Length: 430
Image (cartoon, rainbow, N blue to C red):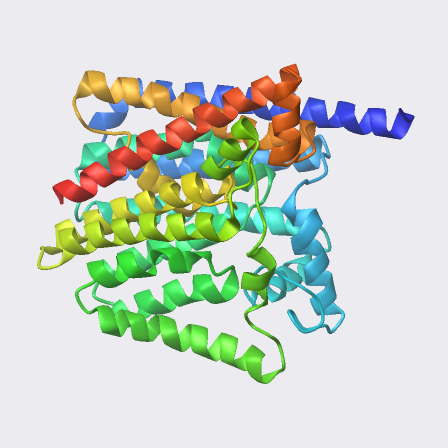
């Protein structure tokens, strides 16, 4: 084995160990914060000031510590995809026509603007961190219209110390948080009767980041009183952006073609293939995902139609969580970073049900959060993203790394299914 390869494996192992350690510390902090009774009795103004301040301090402080003090290079999609595509745009190339991209047409232009100001992948990571600072103010402002204050506070504290947020946004610079903020803004604008603007915010997530927010379109459509006006706002933004690129000669369906046959670990099809040594036909998997999503759409529509505003918005919030979790479990191409799309609604699933039950759920959620960040990092760093066929062979050979991976996969999927059950139950209750 070459010295360079050995050093690369050691660096990957050290990075994995550091991520797991950070995840455990953050998970323990989330449990302790929810047990602190003083945080439940503070005035709204004091609570918000404390949470927003800690959120900004923790995110920006961690960014400075990791990337500026220790000078650790960013990993994952930021240097692998975002930065390179931004440079291609700066060179005058057009997405889809001149280079393949799995992202929305404005995505490389957004990143190009960022690296024009600071020519480093860190500019993109910092942007994600700054965008995320808006998530708690948006959800607390919206949620106080239709959710109990106590539930909102516990969810905010869980998000504040979430290992999922810290790893996938602060360390990896994932752009899914931009979608999360735009969706939260849409919900708040709906509550303030700015329905067209809410649609425009939703459309911006589809035009600027990726197609994936369309997963939530039916839930918004069924839950918004003036649904056609909101749909018009989304259509206008998407029509202008995608129409403009189409006129420029860019095949705008390229992201769908590029993503269509991809797969990943961390989902039920991958685990089934690994355990039984079979190959699940991609179209069969896609059809099953569609059926599950249609079922959630039906539940959402039934709970939201002819309901009052509070019930509609609760249904939308829990529907976003259910759709995210269902996609994560059953899609052949999904991974834990997608939790960021609806992390605050997912945190809300953990609260309520009595003091004792809530404490057990908070503890279980802490374990789930650590598993989420560990499984993804272990698969990507230590196992070189091996496919289900290699996973199956390693399991048959009794390799310890494969057994550990299987344990992580089963725990992760069990967590998804638990939270999905909670989300569906809350939708059914209206």
